[in-house]
Structure formats: structure tokens, C-alpha cells
Image (cartoon, rainbow, N blue to C red; front, side, top):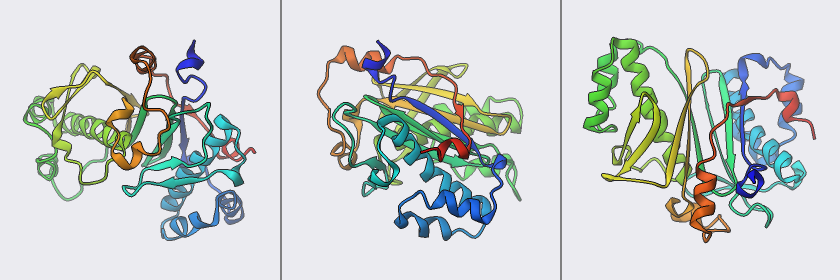
Length: 276
């Protein structure tokens, strides 16, 4: 049954910040739903778009926990590991490994959650380089991708497709790193992705293919991509692994959860997120 493998805890939510044009009072009302310690991290941004992303990435976390676990906003205790990975401190026994991940770039802020598997989400905006050619831009990232991945990018037809191919690889790598809770020090060139027309995506970690991870890419629109990474809790870094309450389970249970097909993201409004 889907619920056994986390169907009730699995969410894929997106907010389009371009569609939310709050008045100062509406912005403050939404921010007031969050604990006060979040407010300085939101207010420090100068640009309104950045403040909206900062607010909504936090609001998505609290709203998701509230809707999935039924915990009132004021009782939700979300903390961060030393690497900056958000986690729920006061979860329930029925939601053993409940974990989530947020991402924001361009017009979108998103969140993904899972009950058993680790989950990572990354959103990228495919923007043309400013002041340099595509090739010059890509050279800045030469050490982050493998020779195989660069060869695939080089075979792309034209600069736009090369840029898109690069962002696909980048998006997948970031989703994996975020899923395991690693920090910026994780070497992205340790990961090598293989695919068939960007389906059946697999990852090699330090040269060894992993059976414990599944990936999916989404075209949110012409300019935005998103990727979901799902994997085994044993691969979490130590600080994040300590926040998970169930690391021992049947292999059959894990693979049943891992193989559940990905569904499209659900577009949420800020009004929906703030319904208590």
C-alpha cells in the first residue's frame, strides 16, 4: 500500500513567486507565522524578490510539516545540522525518517518530502551568461564535472543546448548533495551521471554505480529545471543521520519506496500555505 511506503508523507510543492505580489502588510502577516528567529534571515535581503524567496522557502517547510504531521505552526521545531541541512526536531514515531528539502531559484521556490528515503531537491534557472560566451562560462566549472559528463555537453548542438545540458548535470549533483546533507565541501566530481535521453538516470559515486539512488528531472517551464534525488538513509552524512530515527528496515521496504514513480509538482499559493 502506498501509505506503508510513505505515500502520506510524500509531497512535491512549488510556489511561483512572480504570482505573489504582497503589500507590506501581507508580507508581514505571512512572516509572522514563522518563529522570530527566522525574521532577520529574511529581512537581510535588499531585493524584494530575494526576501520573498527567503520567506517562502521557510514557509513551505512549516506548512508542509503542519499539513503532513498535523503539528501546529507554533509547535513546529525545525533546526539545522552543522552543514545547514534543515530537519524536524519534534517529529512523530509514525513518521520515522520524515525528511524534506527546499530549493529556490528564479521564479520558483519548492519543497520535496519523503518518509523513508532521503530526498533532495534542486531548482535551476537556465540563464545566458552575461559578459562572456557560453564556453567561457562553462570553463569556470571544469573541475566539478567528469570527463564523461563534459563529453556529453560538448556533443550538444549549439550553445543553448550546451548550457541546458550543463544545468541538468549540475541540478542532479546538487540534489544528491542536498539529500545526504553534505556541505559545500563535497566534491561534485565524485559523482558521475549516466542516462538514456535523461530518463533511467543512474549515478556513479567514486566510480562505483549505486543501486540505492533514483533521480528525476522536471522541466518546470522553458527557463527552469528541477531535479529530485531519492536514496538510502545510510548514505546521509553523520550529522544528518543522527536526526533520522529509523536506519534499520527491510531491503524490500526500502526498494518499494525508492521505486515509487515521481509525480508532477503541485503548484501552491501563499494563501494555501498560510491556511492553519
